[in-house]
Image 1: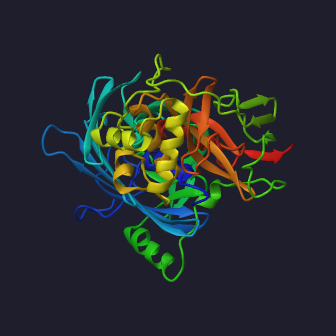
Image 2: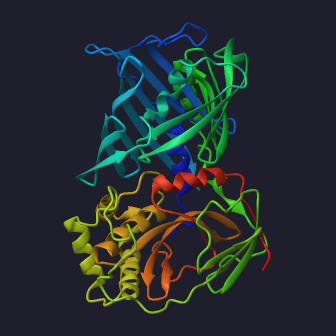
Image 3: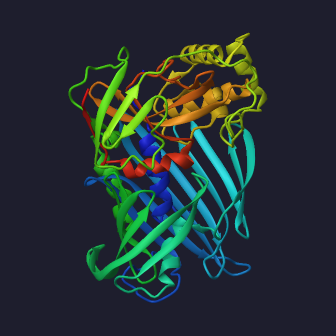
Length: 488
């Protein structure tokens, strides 16, 4: 059994890849490299390369190629990212690409994206219609479509720099943008403050650059851009930094950095050490923690299992109670619904659920049988991708995010109201980011951890949010800030 999963890392990668304005890989063809020192207005066609660094070590590279569209004006941005790292001793690889069509004013018109991570692959296409996006996702051999209505015309976060460069920049000025991230399928508010202007060392020479503060998703990050909005240096959170480089530095520097030694372990950056506890909390009835470094009030903390008072959080293991007869009606909003990556109505999901649950008469009995079936059937393995219930059912491989997503699809297909809980879990002296489930019973919501085989989950489970990757990005603000101390 793996102790942790890649949920924290997945959040950072989804956020960072979209924010940075450059996602990488190899270029589609030869293209001249734009000069970061050139300060003229407008879009400079060509290539931009960036190296990804984690606490001083290379872990990946990024590439952006900008071309003019042959018909209709506007631009085509081809963005690629390759990331190589270690997660608790296992080598991991993530490949992400986004191709965006922009009009002459840099307004987003359409985009395609693809994410490859381990055995998982997710592809999709989006088309902008006014203040809405028609989105299609392909995973597990199935295409799901949805319409996302937005409060503001969507701006791809990857194009935020050039859009910002169209404004009049001055020290102290503030800007607010509403950006769209195709991986999390949500729009997000980005607040930018111009902190200063001065020289920055880029590719062996000094470049005049704007220093920016960015507030997004609970994070406060710094970035540096030139007058064209090209990113020269960008903090991504969790110790990750993207730095403008030459193609040779970005591509071959990574190869040389990895020669003969393991890649840095990004996963350990998300762990929180908490001394004073035994290796496992499986038999404990209550846990009292002192919280510091982060205000938990905006998170989904309080319920019958968790109680937050000031800086004190008390977690009590809830009784299982009586299950609700099936199908459960009425059900809380969204708790039985299909989602693009929770394919409740797919025949394969429904057949697997019926086979696993058999004649289970109520919500608790279904949860027990599904957990037992998943423990027998799935291989626990770190998968740094976007979880899909159908793909996990096909591959039979995944970490906690895959387990929680598949469990939600199976249980909902049988009429059991189910939601995904995301937060922290304790083992062997540290808390790590984790996902599990909750099902509705006669006494309320009951915690269920299909990865660890626990009903209810032990008191080492500290829930912060509900939902998939679109909600999990809220955890970014907790990385490196949340401190926990045992009180009882």
